[in-house]
Image 1 (tube, rainbow, N blue to C red):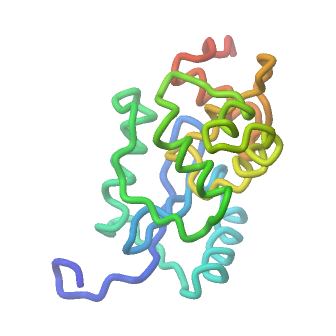
Image 2 (image 1 turned 90 degrees about the vertical axis):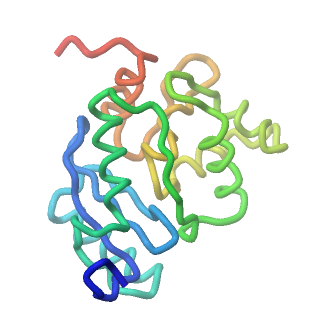
Length: 184
């Protein structure tokens, strides 16, 4: 129950503005469970349907929910350049196995303003030839930005792929000082 004696929904969501466009943030009682890029109405509706299907409960739009308050505050501070690290409880229930292992290693071992190669990250989880599998794990990341898959790049210096689009990845890396800000 929340402070007014109301039962808190099992999964809540809200759309917040960011330096890379609207983001949908969703949280369960365990923590932040999903971040979705480019959260226009159509994208938002598909994301909420997907969450309902995967989590077995209907997510409720609740931007004022205590389950989301800290995540919203930290995401806003990150995009304002006032925060470098996220300190949030995370609900890893949308991902498992190798992908979860790789994303946890990424979240705990690749700090703000740094990058890691796909192969290097594979080595960190004891799978040194699994660079392509690491790329697949990045594409399956349910919590981009907070679990910073934008920090994973090609070993030869290329930017690599990104589920939110390459321009979004460039902007996140520029925010962190890894790349120069675009001229226009």
